[in-house]
Image (spheres, rainbow, N blue to C red):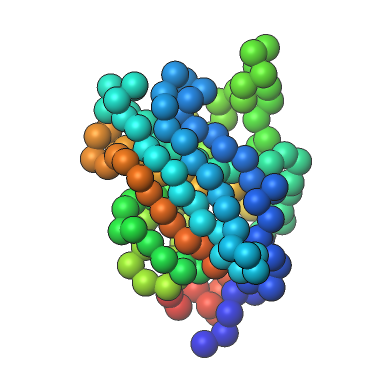
Amino acid sequence: MPGPEFYLFGGYKPWNEHAWTASDDRVRGGKSQSYLIHSVDSSVASFRGNLDITALGGAGFASQRTVDPQSWDLFDYVGIRLGIAQSDGKKYTLVIKDVAPPKRPDNRDEATVSWEYDFVPSGSQVTIRWADFKPTYRGKPKEDAEPLRLDHIRRISIMMRSFFGDQQGPFRLDIRYIAAIMASEQSEG
């Protein structure tokens, strides 16, 4: 079985936890916390933390996102594949953006359209076609969103959220790689 064509993180590119930063519900008064910690040999990144839903009335999120500025041209690819080393069986969300959000006067990011895919890892890979990503704005579907600019991906995030009280507490997802995949590899995973 051939591997992914273009590693964004992991694979033959060692994980660098400094390329990621927390974006948790603490920006909205919540108490959730997340971390992205790589293994000693930098071959696996562990997305972990605690999802606390008490402060926001059953809502909550904890995420790690790529730091700005970064940009990927993924136009020639058909989707993203995550290599999973270990999962706790909880539901996660992969988020991509084709815009680096401008800053508000309080230095927080302006809200922009996000493209999201929810998944529960059940094997060693999660394969996501571009068409599987759904546009959202502030967590709600955005049916009239402009098409995703695959030649201008600016941010990638891994998120744990409560889905309004469905999950909470400690979480951990160990990821071997995040990679763009070619059409010939789409059916694998």
